[in-house]
Image (cartoon, rainbow, N blue to C red; front, side):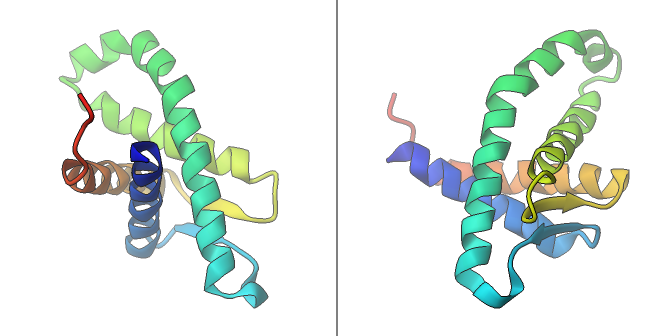
Length: 127
């Protein structure tokens, strides 16, 4: 149940980023209504979660010297790259996440991270 709640939190954080950033959008079938947009948003959240679980640790390990030199600011670039990779993966379909520029990815990555963190505080861990 906790994984489902975290997936919904990720979907909400991606939605907030698409609302606040102009070159970041969720593409869904226009004639299907809000239900189709929510399904596409959940699918994008699943892809984003998989990218963060599989690719992000490898990228963080390989870029560790840059993270240390920049005192952690390079992590913002890594978050933007994960968002951009999610958009690239979902680009093979007619629906999904579209990122228009590098700055949209950086600002979107910051927003997704902050909203995920704030909403994640509300979900207790099962430790």
